[in-house]
Image (cartoon, rainbow, N blue to C red; front, side, top):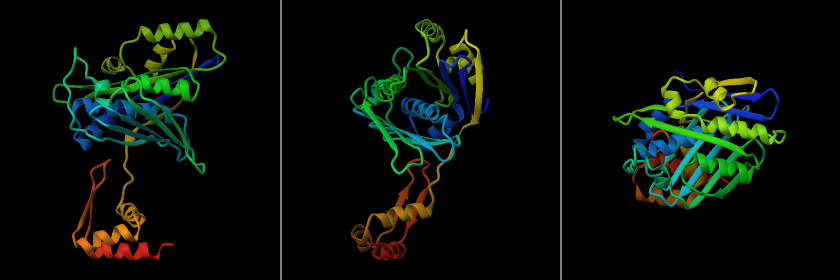
Length: 294
């Protein structure tokens, strides 16, 4: 089943929801990052969460999740755009922690002290940025905490990544259900009961459940209106010109220091691993460009 996500609202207008299948995307990220199972689980959850938040975006809008914790992974970064593309990285992808009772200790790997930041680039002069304390490191819970305390939207979030014994990702995805102000207490109780009775997202996906079926389970008892379905994929927009521009932005002083070493500079994209090499003469050209900048 191809990676995609689907949005829905209840006909009564009291709930909105989105579910995503991200198995292929997370497996691609695992390979690019050379990530351990626990690092893959953390990054996969974050990427899926970013997709869920970006589900209502249009045009060139995008959302970024940045998780800085006191666990050994140090940083998890996930970025999703309105066109269904994503990229992300883990600061220390080789960190490996053994499973505990059959479950990967993602919370321990991320940490329980730090910050959970959501940035929404809506095409305005300044992006929206919300920051809350990291509470559990489990990512889904921290995302729900962020939505409640930063955006004042009560939300249920479930995220999951499942890998086989060879560490290949065979199931990844999740869902987000949000309560709108018009919902009654009885309706909220019904949705909470539905979600409590649902298997883990990875169990549902391994059983063949689609995002549409996941949404029907979460909002059982409500008539649904299904909205946009969007394919999902990994995409890194890095290029030699972008990297060169970043070097020029360092300024003349930093570039002159690199030129004086008379050594080539090797830069590798932290998202896709693509290498960019600049020879001393090429660095000299960039220095000239930097000197011309006001």
